[in-house]
Length: 266
Image 1 (cartoon, helix red, strand yellow):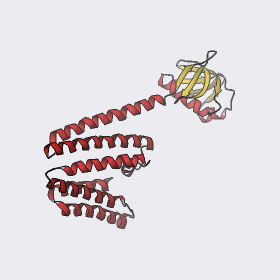
Image 2 (cartoon, helix red, strand yellow):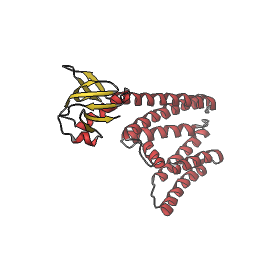
Image 3 (cartoon, rainbow, N blue to C red):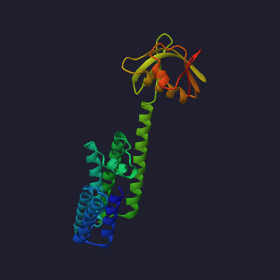
Image 4 (tube, helix red, strand yellow):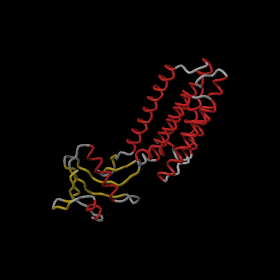
C-alpha cells in the first residue's frame, strides 16, 4: 500500500510541476523504479506497481490533452473513474483490490465478504463523484474546489452509513435467537438455521433440560450459540441438569460436572 501511495503522490506532484509527456514519463518511471527497487533489495516482484504507474501516467496524459481543449482538471475526473473501475471490476472478479491493499498494510485480510462490500460501496462512491466532476468540467470548464470537496464528504458519509447499516443487519442476522416451540420447549436458531430445541429456565444461572440437537448440526454449535444468547442477556452461568448425548463436547467447551449437573460460568 505504501508503495502505491508513493506512486500516487508522484502523480499529484507531476500534475502540479510537470506537463504532458514529461509528467506521464515521470509517473511511469516512478512505478517502474519502485518495482526494480523492491525486486532487487527485498526480493518482491510487485508487477502491479508498473501497471499502476502506467495507468496513472495515462490518466495524467489524458487529462492534459483534455485541458488543452479547455477542460481543466479533467485528469482528476479520469483518475476517479479509473479508481471506480478498479474497485468494481476487481470485486466482480472475486479479488477486491481494496482487500489486497489492506492486507499489505496490516498483514491480514478483513475478510472477502466485508472487503467486497467495502470495495463495492467505495467503487460507486468514486463513480458518482467522478461523474459529478465530469459534469462540472463540462459546464464550467474546470473543477470548482469547494463543491468538489463538499460533495465528496457528503458521498463519503453516505458510504459509511451504508456500510455500517449492512454490518448491523448482518450482525442481527447472525445473532442467536430463541423461538417458541411445542410442549414448553424453545427452538434455538442461528442465521435462520435450527440448531436444536430445549427447555430453558432463564435467570442469573439459567437451567437447561431436555436438549435435542438438530441432526444437521453438532453439540458445540448449539452450546456456543446458547452461551452467546444468554451472556448478551445478563446471564452469569448456565447449567445442564440433564445431558443425554456425548459428554465430550461439554468437557471441551469448559463445563464442569457437579451433583447438580454440568455447569459453566459465562
